[in-house]
Length: 556
Image (cartoon, rainbow, N blue to C red):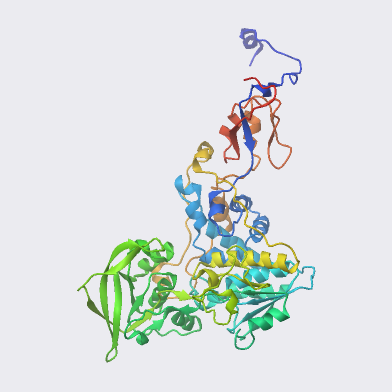
């Protein structure tokens, strides 16, 4: 701007003096509160993974930092990055704006990076010894945590390989065995000892373990299969039995046309595995699709695979004929809600019909085997009685975790239970009080995200095998993201409730009351008038306005 233009400007008052004497904070009736809060994705995660901070690290391409953050809460992100039903993505605020972040796929990328770049951790020894019964996800999670605390850990399992349901039941096209084996080897390198082929209750008792170790964790899962209680049930195969056989190399289907009874994850895995073996499965489920307890994503994939579904149907008997099975099936209708909150299926009188098939597989649920446990930790029905948070039982030093307590649940829920039990055992063997469940942080809703700073953007496309190829192979069907794709996807994260010192509050504050010399902005309340501009311009809901409490000398 030239000098002539400057002369055209009107006179304006300017002060060259220091205005810090004018402390305007006593004008305030609202005050800004600066604190990080829980993102809905992290709140929904059973492990409480710090997802926004992980996304920030990945968006910078810093997989080492992302790995450090994930491993604080999740010892096996390469596993959960494949089989977790990703409740985090359901909770994601971005889901209500355009599309949810592909959090699970990014977690898998970080988990695979960890497996490639892992360094062996050698903790300081405490001299304490802990026995863990069961090498499924709960047992492995507890073993990882306890070994990192310096305790000697021995894991017992009746099978000849480590992993429990991870290697017995989950098909390899969802979770390759090599991924689990690498996690097991890492634990061995850290000092965890595995005693395989040992059945507790036959080869050694829980009492013997309690007398030999400072604490015992039982995490044997739910491997017993529920029975239907119908005539001819002996002609049905068990769902877990079938999946175990396939995982161990059996590649011959039990027949061409196979009925699968059930609506849970095992039933879906059985049906999708049958497709890969060249069979034509039909799922018979006594409720509707809406009530299926299976992971929705897996149900959709089963439909895409060509699996047939017959809802509101229930077999009532089976007869073995010359080379095939004849099932008598009754049609159902939904009635009053049961204790699970789902409508109770009720048979429709006179609706029976016959269904012919080459084989039938029962997959109506799994139950825990508890006969080997001390009677004092069981109720009258034989269920384990334990603290829901720590897994502690009435017997001092005996803890339980995972599906043994909850019944069939997800892998990530079992890992979370194993970690909670591990923390409780660590406290117990050190002679400290057991941990208590902390009150969760408040969650940032979408309405408190400043969407003006976030242009709409589509979710990354997750690469996977073509449908025609995946239905003929047991190779992993969902493929991983490359780093560039993951960085772009992670950059979509709102980072709800997590401050990244973007300085918006500092820039917009009319009173210069915001300071950035720390991990979080702080407000000098001597000058803050409580105008709320900082909260409005905070993109991530870290700053909120609260009503000012009455102050001595404040102007009414």
